[in-house]
Length: 190
Image (cartoon, rainbow, N blue to C red; front, side, top):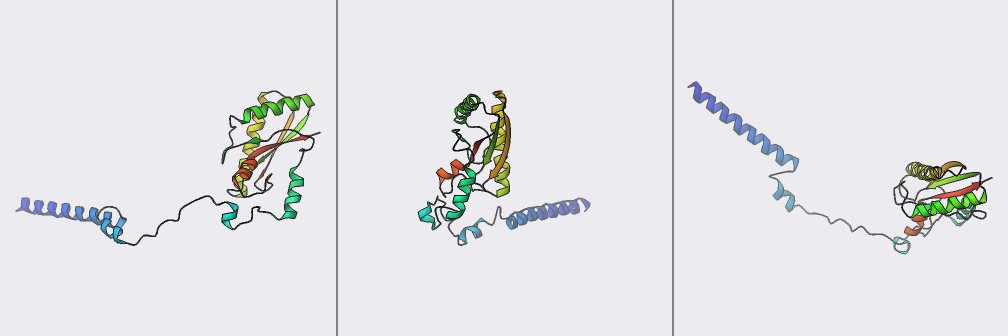
């Protein structure tokens, strides 16, 4: 009698455990409830595509003409006297690209030839992401350029700053402009 009671109790536990496992699987959405999900109406996801300024209904520039003129004047620091190229970066990256190394070498030669004593390296980001994130990314980009130039032993006082996305070099809402803003700009200080 005790043996049959134990077997019945054991059988009951197995049945309850199996019911609990299948019951949980159905409630969590995995397992036995697939037929119900398949019969529900689904809404198709919209296709993701790049919008050109003409398609988007947005103005080609994010800033007013007056603000563009003011920013262009501020951003032109050193451009008239300086013929130094900007160092470009990939999206969301602060590591030097292989095409940036010849630019850095040419800029270093020019700085040495001109007898430059001080420079400011201005890091920037594109319009994607928050201002705070782009400030940090711009600083990391400027420090990467400074680190490379220090290896060349130029003997120049190099300072870094970051403008993030708040002081763009290019104002258009397009890929070419975003690439120009993902950069480090050289400013000669005397």
